[in-house]
Length: 64
Image (cartoon, rainbow, N blue to C red; front, side):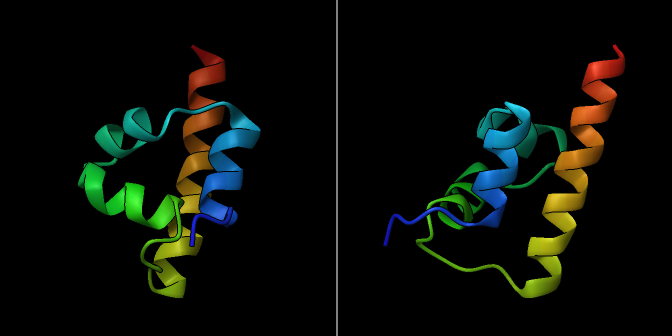
């Protein structure tokens, strides 16, 4: 059940910590952890939203 998924891959690609992103987007850490580690699957629109937000967050962080 601990297979990589697209949210986890996006975090790894941009070098963003799970807890850092969850806090920034006000996502409960346990929920986000479950999504990242495949313990639960978010709705497809939430998965796409997370990936888009991770990319935006990475760009914002790089600009600082």
